[in-house]
Image (cartoon, rainbow, N blue to C red):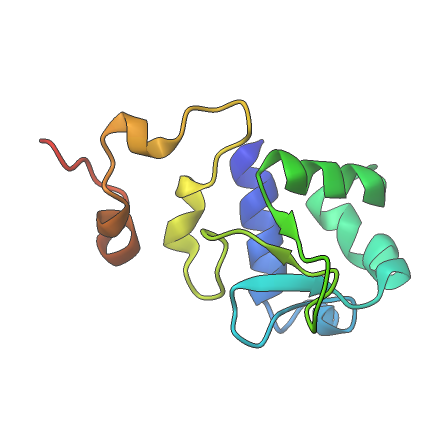
Length: 124
């Protein structure tokens, strides 16, 4: 379920060919977060691809479970951010864990290896 949610969200954000996604959600210009541009359109067109039969509030709860932070002030008000959810870097997605999972660093994975080479064991 983790991979499905995160990878589907990432793919929809990254795809320019899926029904003009940018009208409902889009990466922030720097690519380190995303925003819901048009909530009604997002709910009717995009949300059903990410989480079928789920309401917007449940989508937001899922983001919180994966430790996404909602920006509460400034120019990016309402945008969602996670340090490992970045445009063009799907190799970081395995580093995202839920609030009830053990952080990946405890498994002996070197974060720098993931960023540059994909997931690998550092002590083998």
